[in-house]
Length: 219
Image (cartoon, rainbow, N blue to C red):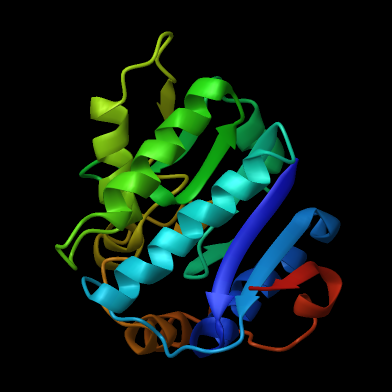
C-alpha cells in the first residue's frame, strides 16, 4: 500500500500541515509518497489553473496504481485526527471514498488496482483533458467516468461515514465533530481561506517535521 499526495510550492505549507497531522495521529510515514511541483501559485477552485492541477492529480494516481494494489489519496486540505489506514482498508470495494454530500469525494479515497478501476481513471483523465469548462475538476471527471465507462464487472464504490470522515460543511459549519477521524477543509474556494480556518480551529502546523520523513518526488 502507498499513500500519495501532490502539491505545488504555493500549497506546500498545507501539505506539511496534513503530514504533521498524520504523524501525530500515528500514520506510518514511510507509506507516504509526496509529489511536489517546483513552481505554481495556489489555484482557486473552479478556475483553469485548478482544473490543470486536478488533471495532474489523476495522472499521479494512475501512475501509483501501476505500482501497488492499494493506493490511498489524501488532499492537502485534510487534517487527520486518527490513523485511519486499517479502518479504510477494512471496507470492501474498488473505491472507498469520502462522502461529499453531493457524491463520492476524490479528495480522500482508497482505490484498489484492477483493470476496470484503471479504465475508470483513464476515462476521467481523457474527459477532463478535453473539457473546456474551467469549473470542472477531477471529482466531476470521476463521476462522469463511473457513469459512462462500460466495463464488466463495474467497479464498486463504498462511501465512508459522513460523521467519521466529514467534509468542511459537516465539520466546520454544522459542528458535527464528536466522531470525526479526519476533516476535509473543502467548501472554500481558496487556499488562503482554508489556512485561516485551520488556524482558527487550532489545526495548523506547517513545520518540516513530517515532510522530512516521507518519500518525495519533483514533478
